[in-house]
Length: 210
Image (cartoon, rainbow, N blue to C red; front, side, top):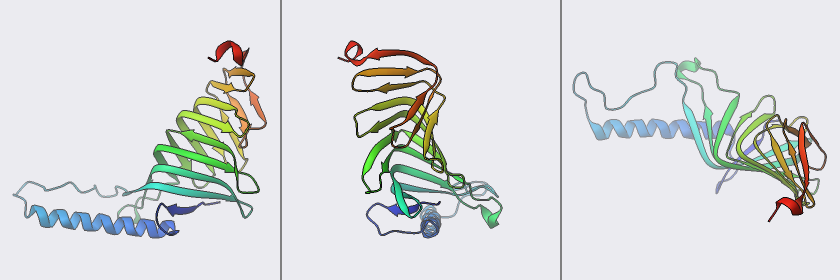
């Protein structure tokens, strides 16, 4: 299910309206550059235009997403910057099914009361709007309301299955122990039921934590 898009400090705005506004602003910027620079000498160019067929990119900053499941808001995501590819000249370039997120993101997984029972943070992500999959990268940290944390370098979020998984090494910190999974990890989004793959060791937390 496609998320509702909110821009910080503004009323809810459909994604199509966001694209229209971004394209209109882009046109105004180009017009301003032409007026400011004046005519170019023969054989020179004041600025570079996209090649024919190149896609435009719309950037949004400080974006808030709400994801719903069966008419219930199941997750809330805050993204530093979202970059989305748009349709190119005369519609020759189809819009991408994915959008890129960088400058940090935080996802709050919500219970039936609308309260966050777990939190997921990462440096960047790639989200597929069609299949409900997201790939998170860089300093990935999953935590729950019991004080447990999972740390890894990358993580997949399957919204349709309500699951999180990775084949990268993971480290899970609990109150009384630390578990390392060499070959990955799988969990529900509430981080209450999980499986480790290739456990390399189970240590008492008092022995490794300061």
